[in-house]
Length: 163
Length: 95
Picture (cartoon, rainbow over the protein chains, first blue to last red):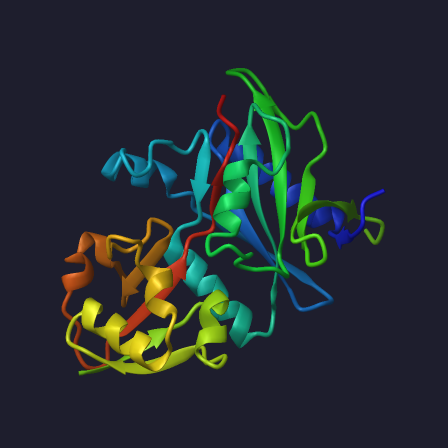
């Protein structure tokens, strides 16, 4: 039994899956804002390839195995979040040809100052598989949410029952 | 030189929840010094042990990443906007 629920409607789940498929074999990333009634999906650019090209010793991975949301897009989305009172509900990214899990790197990057950067935002991970002929999502995506009592990210359940 | 610095949500507990603060200095390094003088604790979060800007901290001067300008020495002017943006990042498990 998972402790917490993240409500996401079918439309948002489809947009996330489609984004993961279209960016395959690279990791996709994005942000979901919510005013409590409606969710707003913001696809972001993964700048990992650019980071890797410019500074491979600091950024040994490219976009096939890592992501970083374009900081400028992140800044604009944070501004929108505050101006329109739409808190960040979740961040999402894909794992191309890997299962959905919250990796050590995912966790370390979410808790850079020894505490969660955005404790109220969940992290959605989409497993996406494929080859030259077909790209598919064979398994369910998974969600991880900061648990204040445990002091760690734990898996939550996705609830799409309201459409 | 007075510049507006945008503080990301995770650091606002150091700025009494202020999303933007006004600080003085004519380059990024001096701005960060002034920021830390007014809001102690910010500097150690931005810099690593060698006083370099941490890998996961992005600093933008207006629309430009200061890594591609002059880093900490990047000059700033009245009316500029500086943003501190901790990276949202991650990656798969590599064996």
